[in-house]
Image (cartoon, rainbow, N blue to C red; front, side):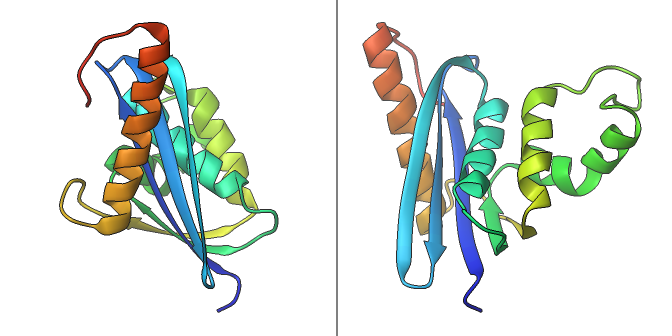
Amino acid sequence: MANRVTLHTDGSCLNNPGPGGWAAVLQWRDEERELSGAMPDTTNNRMELQAAIEGLNALKRPMEIDLHTDSKYVMQGVTDWMPRWKANGWRTAAKKPVMNQDLWQELDTALQRHRVTWHWVKGHAGNALNERCDLLARAAATELAATEGFAGSND
């Protein structure tokens, strides 16, 4: 189908929390686009969420999307937990505020425009596009850390 996009995403963080990076690779027809970015004081989960948000928001019109992620946190959050969180006013079953609520709400808004089919892939297991996203996200985090004088290890 002409309106079907394949989207791969990944997030990375140095010392979790610490400088983090996110990346997305979009494929549509015979075109491919890489996106990446970094944030100074964040977590791996936030970067995984940011990658999905940025990938979805890069699309200018509603699309059918096969979204591939190695983050069970993001995939389960959308497919299992988010409907209950929304019904409970963005609170967990324990009545506590949902962690990373700001990004979950951004992701929820981005998802409204598209029809997304979620695919979980095992990280660091040889999936070429997942590996590329991992490299892009780590490179973005590492570059930011270098400009800030941060020394740490990759997650």
